[in-house]
Image (cartoon, rainbow, N blue to C red; front, side, top):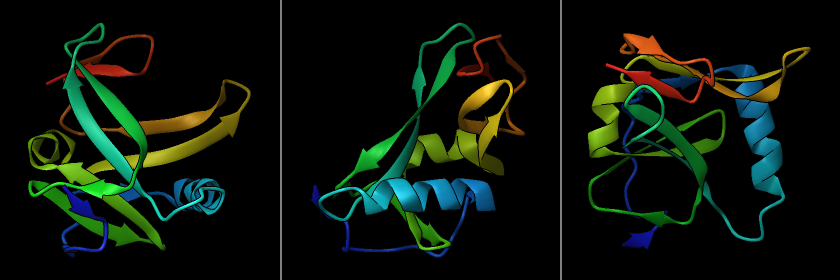
Length: 118
């Protein structure tokens, strides 16, 4: 494990909407030390896979790191194949507020919106 500044790739397997970039920039500015958004796909959830989003100060040797709109994003090598072409959005409306991932690789999802199948 190393510091976030070690290496950065220009490849972007996912896209952050302007709304997501704005909300993430606000949240990251509140953190005491520089952090990146870590996006991962893990086993579990109603449909077989689930998304994990959180802030991280560490970068691992198998991470893909890129930046969009001033927001650094970290995705582990295994999750990249499930997230290729996905769009991360921040929604704030009548149905609630939060981050949503539109994933073209998903063949199904459940009502919770947090899990999917491929």
